[in-house]
Image (cartoon, rainbow, N blue to C red; front, side, top):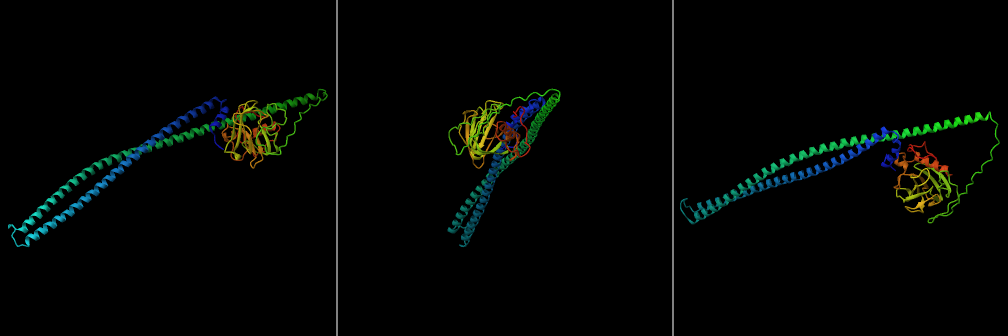
Amino acid sequence: MVAGLSGASLAGVALNVSTHPAVAASVSGDRSRIGRLEAEIAQEGATVQTLVGRANATQARENTIKAHVARASQELVSERGTVARLTGEVRQVAISAYVAGGSTGVGIGTPSANSDLASVYANVATSRFDQVLTNYSLARHRISVARTVLRIEGQRERTTLRQLRSAEQVANQAVAQDEQLLSGVRGNLQGLLAAAAARQAAAQRAQEQALARAEAAAAAAAAATSTTMPVPPPAPARAHVRMAPRRAVTHRVVNGPLAAPSQVAAPTGYLDPLRGIAGLSPERIDQGVDYSGYGPIFAIGDGVVLSTVNGGWPGGTYITYRLTNGPAAGMVVYAAEDINPTVSVGQSVNADTVIGTVYGGPDGIETGWANGSLGDTMAAAAGQFYGNNTTAFGANFSTLLTSLGAPGGVEQNAPSGALPLGWPNW
């Protein structure tokens, strides 16, 4: 379960700060500021993503330019090799022509068959050499121009890349600053809510102490009066309402409603929901109250079923219903773990409705105050529960069950946290 302040817990504790206008205004201002900061962070995050995309595209273009430069350099090396090879061929032809012309003993200016052949070879070689030189010169010029263009484009892309990296760094710094500011505002909001809860708990304790003093004073006054007035005859004893014994359930019931044992409703209009469970044994108080046993479990009073299952709880059962009568009207009760549900979502229930059958599984059951129908408890939503401790909401529900005739749970510690202003006590 969530240990921090969730949105639902903020809504619950908001009742505490409503009686302090300055605190309420500060809380409202902090919430508005949180909303603005979250919107700014989202916008700056989108800007960072855009800059990163542009930087990656620029880097890709720079890599392409580098590849073109490398390929042009390779072509130039190849052209140089071709020139060297053809130069060697020309030299070989010239040497062959010279040797052929000199072997006949004919003078340089005397025409002969051999000298004509040498002239042909020389002309062919010269023509090829001129062509190669021309191609080489053109290739060098083309490669030189291409390298110049690529160098200019590369410089431009590198400049753009540096600018994008700088802008990205600035945007990231802005996001970090806003997140730090947002963390501070949230901490301030939680501090205000915690202080409001502490004030409410102190006011409640003061009220209880004042009531105790008033009762003590009244008792003292009554004792003083009794010493001066004759003692009246004792009034006839009022007959106590005899509760019908629990009906033991000796088999596991899966489907169909069970008849509720007769019981007189408490002044709250609620009935003991555990009155039909055989072998009922109270266990610890944590988020709610844990019990073991087997048999039917009833609704506390009138209400509407909100859920019956949730995979986050042992056994997968999480029955919730919103009360529509009594001091807790509007609040949500849960009964979870080793229970077979016998109701469905949307069904209306009352204190005689069997909402499920406890089947005596390995986890037992837990019942208490729920924060809606999604599997969260009021204790967890208010940040009171740390794993196995007794919470204020769990202790409050245990007191309610005790007032209805059920055995209360076992406290593990002084209840942690406080109840919202106006929460019913029993």
